[in-house]
Amino acid sequence: MKRMHIILILLIAVMIGAMIGAINDSSSYANFDEAFTNPSSEYHVVGKLARDREMKYDPETNPDMFTFWLEDVNGEEKQVVLHKSKPQDFERSEQIVLIGSVEGDVFHANDILMKCPSKYTDGTVQAKEQASI
Image 1: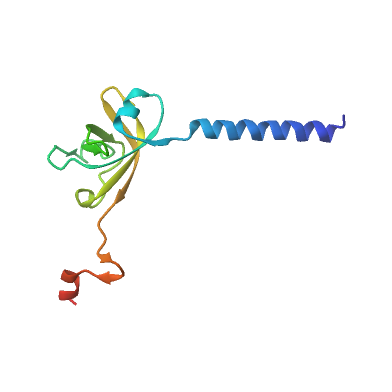
Image 2: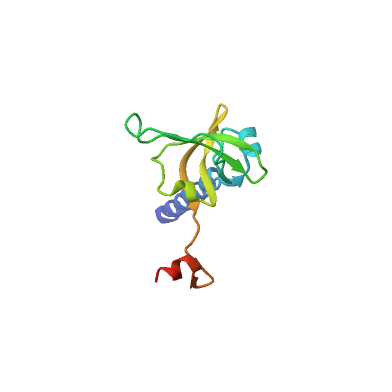
């Protein structure tokens, strides 16, 4: 076998190994029940802010720690620790997607995606916005 053939075979083997590793490390959408069943995996948990529960954010003590409660799509509420600063307009969010894993009784999120209400609906400005124009 030529040296070039051996190098190509090794390169293909490395690429296949990288693809398999990427597939195994990828996270998936879940609810809290599934995430707490398998705490070693990373999940995307979809839910909404439990507005009646306490939120804690003290930027003077730790600016990269925000604690709140989230209600998943099944109605289960769990405490969440976001390892980032509190997002702007967090309380206005309609839907939240957390990316993280479970540690103990708490979901630890490394990232957050928020769906906030839009001031536009169906391509038109809402009525209260039009009144001020």
